[in-house]
Amino acid sequence: MKILSAAQLKIVDAYTIEHEPVSSTNLMERASRAVADKIRECWSSDTPIKVFAGPGNNGGDALAIARMLGEASYKVYVYLFNTSDGLSPDCQINKQRLVDFQDVKQNMLGVRNVEFVEVTSQFTPPKLEEGDLVVDGLFGTGLSRPLNGGFASVVKYINASPATVVSIDVPSGLMCEDNTYNVMNHIIKANYTYTIQYPKLAFFFPENDQYVGEWEILDIGIIDPNTEETATCYHFTEKKDMVPMLKNRSKFAHKGTMGHAVLIAGKKGMAGAAILSARACMRSGLGKLTIRTPESNVRIMQESVPEAVLNIDVDANCFSQSFDTSEFDAMAIGPGIGTSSYTVQAFIEQVSMTKCPMVIDADALNILGSHRGWINQLPRRCILTPHKKELFGLISTTRNSYEELERTRELAVRQRIYILIKGAYSAVVTPQGNVYFNSTGNPGMATAGAGDVLTGIILSLLAQSYDPEIALRLGVYLHGLAGDLAAEELSYEGLISTDIVNYLPKAFKKLREK
Image (cartoon, rainbow, N blue to C red; front, top):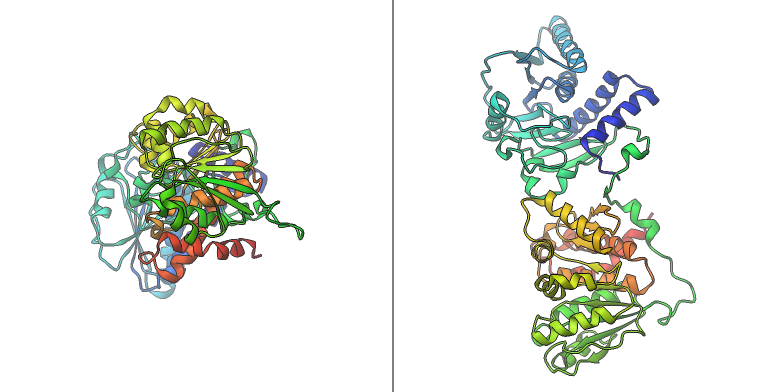
């Protein structure tokens, strides 16, 4: 699924209007119906609805939603802000439709479901109570500067209330992409955002979660011309994208045809990282696994991962010496290896001499962060899987997630490598500068060892001859899906990394389900 910019959203709207064809008013009606239906699905008709509509098309949506909810016997209070006497044409049409509906309803039944107030100067705000539902339709994707003045005051008033807030398409005041220079306390804090057709880039950044709340995409049949004008480097990965990537096994497959991987992991006292990564690797379809680890880990590794072969380092306590990896189909390095001087030197020697596809994670990333010049020695198309702190070691700290993503894209393109930014909506960044946000995973996966599990999954797929981009995207999806399946049964709080490994078989099975 594409993630389009605000400018591109205007293009696809215009294209739909011209080529469906459909009038802009009827397209607005379609979008409003989708939101109104969602509200009716989630809130009963005895819920008081307070609608705040701005002068543009987002306000037109809000007025249409108010009319539709009034038709469904909801009690709706509408406040249209028209302080400059400049409603958009479609907003003006929906204002008149709402007024006409209000008059007809009162004449027919003697009741008025919709109370309509047009604010042209002074505004006396209504009381917003805990049981109220506020529909935010002040501003949408066309906003290009921070809110101020009266609109900022309205936003603050809504945010200070105990009412539940639903935003149409995007919370008022939030820019679709870059909010670096926005005034963040002038943005609606929605509990729910019902976004039209496409997710917005700003939804995927952690600092915006307090504004966006839970979001859902409503499909209203917008047509994408799929031309250069709507080409984008940002995408949202769903199950339908992943299913074709998963290979089918040959009836004649054997361990020699399903890949031989090598995992460099674990120092003394950190065997757990190696075990988690190794188990995940074996649970992801791999034929053979060799683990390079110090002698201090031999007994626990053989007991914990009996399916793996051990390659024992000459140092009893850490990874201290590079070795020949020519017999392997893929390599991963980093989980629990530490950052001793011996390990640091062995790391760069190992990475420089290894020719097979590789994953660099955990302590290996910390080593890179302390020796940034070594990034130039990384082989092309290798995979780096940092969490936020490890990423800052590579690109330095940033003002916000938008800048972080752009710097990561620059690094990936410059070095021709893959970088995974781990977290909610983990972002796969490719050497071409494309970004794929992942749709699986949950807060219960914020637990020690989850990253080691992911490294094992990706390593396994690489060794099975998956292209690095597919191995990374598929691995991230399966990792999150296993976590979702585990959390569904065990709860967020009860989830540990071993559970993610144990649910990997179910994740593969789930992905193959039609």
